[in-house]
Amino acid sequence: MLRRLYRCAVRLHPDSFRRRFGDEMLYIFDQQKGIRAALGVTLDCVFSLLRQWILRPQASAELAAAPLPCPTTDHIPSFGTLDAFRPRTSAIINGAVLSAILFCMTVVAIRHSWIHVLHLHIREIGTDWEQQVPAAARPSHSAWLQLDPYVGEYISKFPPTKISIQIEGDHLSLAFAGHTGLALSPVSTKKFIIEGIASDYADFTSDGQGRICCLSLVISGKVITAQR
Image (cartoon, rainbow, N blue to C red; front, top):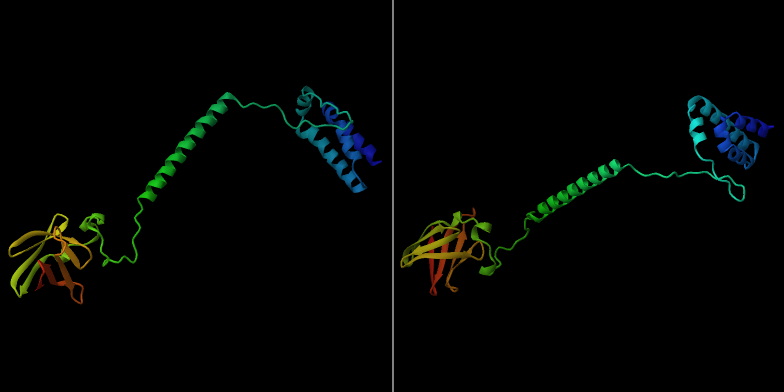
């Protein structure tokens, strides 16, 4: 009884639809097991009937023009699922242009990000300023040391003399009786060597507030202590 009802619903479909899918629909119904499954397929066929006549009246002409599926040797219906498709030439050109633009934007973004990474300055933590660094490997003095706190006049009582510390260019310059324009090169925040004379150097001492207050100058084996 249910199969007759199903066959009637199949026959009520448009002729072109029934010729193309009628056998497949009957085959699907015969494969169902149980009344509930068969009833579900029947209801689906009724809904398909309504769709074909009410919502898709133009489908009959389209299906009539389409080729029928070729039957297989074992009489099992086959469905055509893929159609030959070739995109329009304009669509291919537009896709190629968009792909090229996207690629260029990606390259520029990556290059810009790497520039920022390469120019990133990382602050050093725990640097030991007392560690002596070879003069050839040291950067310019102003790059890592403020020179202004050392500038001034230092007075020595024994022997009585006045030592002057000034800034010349990017380094400190020392001058006292008989010696002028001696360039000082820092090896730490306290110790400066006199360039050209490896054994001569100047030691600066700071007070409790961190201000430079005293200078010890070692030159030609003699020590001169001066106060600011």
